[in-house]
Amino acid sequence: MTDPGPLVLVVEDEPQMRRFLRASLASHGFQPIEVSTARDALARLTGQAPEMVLLDLGLPDGDGIELTREIRGWSRVPIIVISARGRETDKVEALDAGADDYLTKPFGVAELLARMRVALRHAREAGGAPAPVISVGPLRLDLGRRVVTVDEREVRLTPIEYRLLALLAQNAGKVLTQRQILGEVWGRGHTGDAHYLRVYMAQLRRKLEPDPARPRLLVTEPGVGYRLRDRD
Image 1 (cartoon, helix red, strand yellow):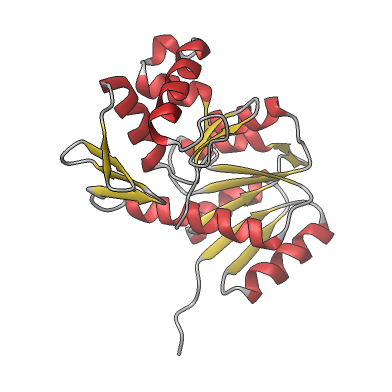
Image 2 (cartoon, helix red, strand yellow):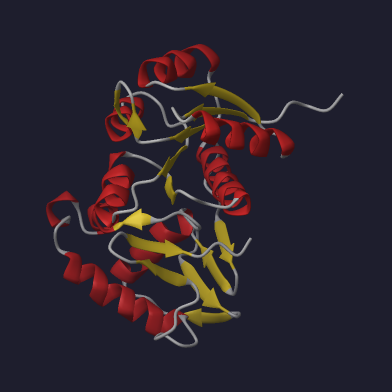
């Protein structure tokens, strides 16, 4: 017998979207469990311990962003928001609340599955020892030796450039908001200093990208933050 796939909690109040997600997930080896309210979501999280949550923001008994904050108070389960709200402010708020990723409806099954694989991999890696070497496309970052190479050519980085790149590499494929990055790299007192981040991202792109004006690795998520493209 084959092992059952990951248990995925679907928190969605639209029956049509639940049917779509149920069929898509089941056909790709996941085990979906469905609820339509925030209250039921919390009950299933504590009772069944799913490996991932797909969360709509507009629930009949509460807001998905508040639910995300509540979950993050006691759990690191990956949360991917799936919402019709496409405003940048909604994306930033959800990510800052602790969501791992954000997909705007409508979306394709292939994109959803790719985002889920990234989030599950991050969660599993976080549960073990940190990877001493991270490779993404032509980029190789040796965390133990603090050595960065691109196409086997060593690249010299300043301490802040290195911390910024290491943060993005450890979350490769995941969008990080400007506030998250500023807080991790510069400290909590600098979460509003977006100009620092723009300057250092430009410097990193000049050192790492073949064409800094058309970055292929260090990708901007307009109005939200940045993502190191996952080539795996």
